[in-house]
Amino acid sequence: MAELQPLQYFVIVMAILIIVLVVRGLRIVQQAEVVIVERLGRYHATLHSGVNVIWPFIDKPRRITWRYVQYDVTGARLQVLQRETERIDLRETVYDFPRQNVITKDNVQIEINALLYFQITDAVKAVYEISNLPDAIEKLTQTALRNLIGGLPLDETLTSREQINHKLRIILDEAGEKWGVKVNRVELQDISPPQDIRIAMEKQMRAERDRRATILEAEGQKRSAILQAEGKREAQIAEAEGLKQAEVLKAEGEAVAIQRVADAEASAIRAVAEAVRAGKADPTQYLIAMKYIEALKEMVKGSGNKVVYMPYEATGILSAVGGIRELLKEGGKS
Image (cartoon, rainbow, N blue to C red; front, side, top):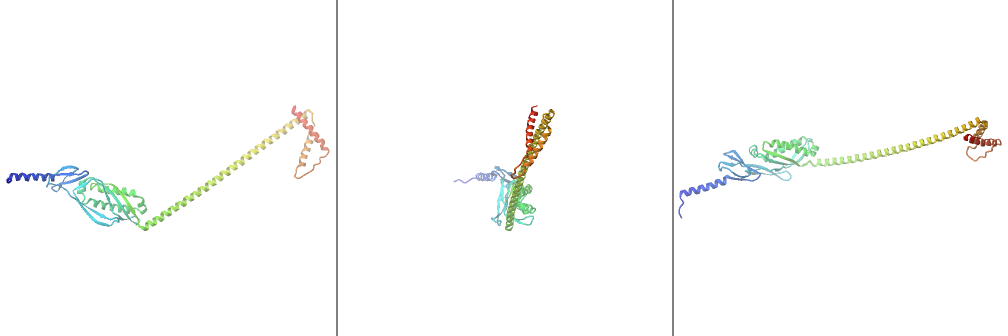
């Protein structure tokens, strides 16, 4: 077997060097990821998704060390996790904060568990403006949450989750702009007051419900009494209107009857006057007959059984009444 010449050694070494340079110089970046490249210790470029070429031994990806604190379900700290990476994920990230104790404005200690949705928008700022981005976001969220809850009483804290989420997102978004982070949403998972406060709140809620029920019952009884009174009043008004109408109709009937009687008497008087002027009747007999008739009316009045005796002279007067009738007939014909 022939020995290799120096030129062949040189070719082999150059080939190996080229292969190493190609392997070290080609960088394939996944979708939604970026890589920060430094040249001789200074920022040089940002590699985006796809195939990228760098100069080996001159250009070097910046490695990032991020530390995470792991907690159990009760919020107790278990361990600190440290992860080194040279790739920065640009997708939205969900960070679950552990339970923390917060004191409200009325000095009530409560436990709050929050979720944070953030996204890296500027990888350069996320690498060079802050040393440990997840830890910084966690500490900033805890501080801002304590400040917000400290200015609210307990009742308002329990009923103002949307307002707290909105204010907290604004605070984190303003601070995260310097770090190249966009805070999309902040959600309060759970707000847990102490056991004695929960018992007192349940009692208060039960008392409030009983009060509302009592008020509704009283309002119903009041409305019922008002409706009954209005019904009685309308019934009395209707009855009074009916009595009034009946009295009016009765009075009108009596007035018509009186008018007719008066018209009849006026006609009779006119007929008698005509007969007297014509010389057909004696007015003296007419007046005597009318007096006798009135006397007879008074005699037959009264209760009980009575026997009325009529004097003999009265029979003549009654015959005169017949004559008056005939006189009235003649006066009517004339």
